[in-house]
Image 1 (cartoon, helix red, strand yellow):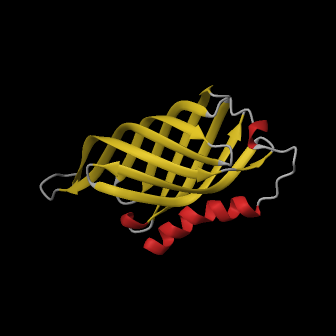
Image 2: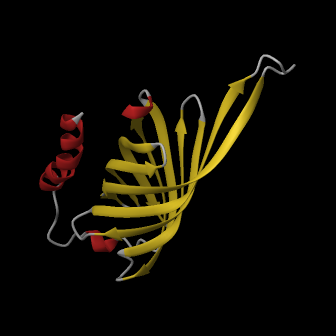
Image 3: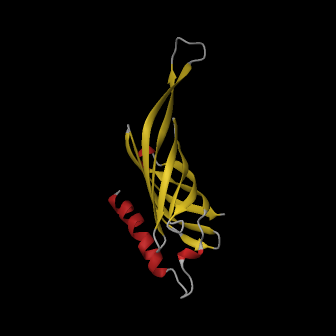
Length: 170
């Protein structure tokens, strides 16, 4: 597990060093006024379930290096696990972005009861949740793609999502 985390933390630096920059090219060419992005990855602590994280961010300062918006995350496993959050983001000049999101997590689990005709009830719980996302953006016109790690902090513990970040600026 430690090797996987280390690979995801180092791979953006390797990608950055191998990414060919022209003298006239910089990440500042991308306005980042509005961005919609989606991250898809696997979550080891949830039996390698698939996680999807999407967000809309509006650039608000420092030439749109600073942004704020709304975020949604879901984990596709045996129980419903969805969070809706406010998100803030900072873009460094060399392609790395760091985002923090805080919001409400909705967890639903099905309970099987033999005494009921339907045989099951759904128990829903709401909790405070936080997410930290680290991504490396490789620009392709108005698109950007790169590796990401998403760390979720909630009442049940911490989960990690390793995957790919894909965004579009408009």
